[in-house]
Amino acid sequence: MVDETPIRVQKNLEEKGIPFAKDQAMGVYSSIWNADDWATQGGLVKTDWSHAPFVASYKEFQIDACEIPTTTDLSKCNGDQKFWWDEPTVSELSLHQNHQLIWVRANHMIYDYCFDATRFPVTPLECQHHRHL
Image (cartoon, rainbow, N blue to C red; front, side, top):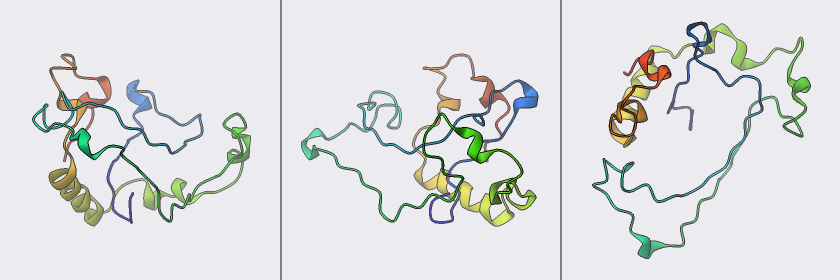
């Protein structure tokens, strides 16, 4: 979610043999790489390097999660604690959130590796079970 709008959904499909990231801490980082030969509408849009250096920043970033001091001590998030993301009401998107996600994909998504047959001739396992809205 970004500003209460869903931008990506990662379903837990472990029962279908697809690994799900649940046993390691999450982090936030940014990077930039030159992927304009494949990730920008199939290479149609090229990076304008005359605008370099590129700068990214986070404004009013808030983590609403189980914060831990190191990535090696996950025990602080385990146990009998209850967290908002474990509640049944947030395990699925609402109808409104589904519509928001459709809008985000239609208006902002440029690249989806699940549909990149050139780079991935065999559809990745998680994409075979992924319901694209």
